[in-house]
Image 1 (spheres, rainbow, N blue to C red):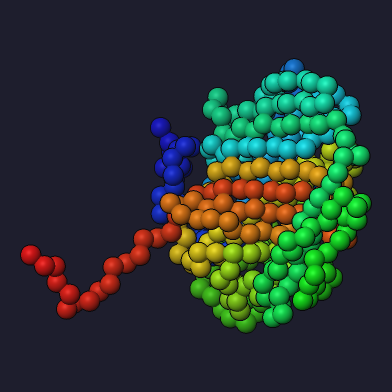
Image 2 (cartoon, rainbow, N blue to C red):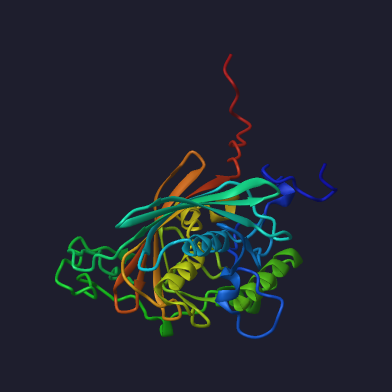
Length: 370
C-alpha cells in the first residue's frame, strides 16, 4: 500500500502529478559544487558475474522518474564490460517499461546472448524492487573500415533562416565525410548560438510570471546550468518570446559534455547515449503545434546506430525531426554530426504524447436533432 502523496510504480500519474508540459527539463546536478562530471552519471559497480548496480541516479526536475538517458547509458556501460576487446558497439534498441525510482539503485543484469567472430550480442534487464523497468539489446561489431560509406550531409537553413533543408545527394564512398549539401544558409556554429537556458532567463527578465511558473523556470534553469551536458539552441526561431516552441517538426541543438570523457571511443558512446535523450520527444508536440496542451509525455523506446568516431567534449549537432504522430504516439528521428559535418550517429525514439481533450464548441443555438 502506498503512503499518502506517493505514486504506485507502473500506473499513470494523476493530473495533480503531471508536470507542466510547456517547459522542457534538464537533469539534476550532483549534490556538490564545481563543474558536473559526466563520468559520475554513467558509473556502474559490478556486484556479481554479469550483474551491476547504479552508483548515482538523477531525476529531472518535476519528472516522474530517473532521467531515461542515464538508464540507457548505465545499461550500455554494464554491457560493455562483458564484451571482448576489439568489438565496438554499433547499435542498441531499448524499451522503457516503468519509471525509475531515484532513491534506490537500479540493478543491471547482462545476458551474453551471442559471441560470434564478427558480431557480439548482449541484452540487459534493468530492475528495481524485482521488476523490470527497462530492457535493451546491444550489438557489437568487429570494425570493417575499408567497406564503402555513405552519409546524409549536414542540413542547412532555408532562405529565411528558419527551417532545415535536406540534401538528397549525400556523401558517397569518396572518403569525404565532411561534404555538405548545396545550401541557402549554413546553420550557425555553437559560438553564435544561445545557451538553452537563456530563453527562460529572458522570460524572467522581461516578465513576472505567477509564483508556480516562476518556481518551475528557476528550478529548470538551475538544473540546466548544473547538467554535465551543455546545450545551445542551433535552429533560429524554435521558441517564441515566452519560451514556447513554435510550430514545425524540426529541432536542432549543439551539445557537448562540460568535461572530457576518458576511456576511448566506447566510453564516448556511453556518454552520447546519455545525451541523446535530451529534447528528442519534445519534437512531437512541436510538430503537432500543441506544446501548451500536452497532458502527458513519456518515452516508449530508444534506438541508436553509431558510424563514425567522435569526442563528446567537442561540439556535436543534434538534428531532430518528427516523422509521424497519431493515436497518442509520435516518432522522431535524430542525426548527430561533428562540427566538421561528419555524421556520427543516428537516433530514433517513439513516445507517448497525450493532449488534453478538445472542448466541444459552446454554441447555445445548436441543438441535437431527435
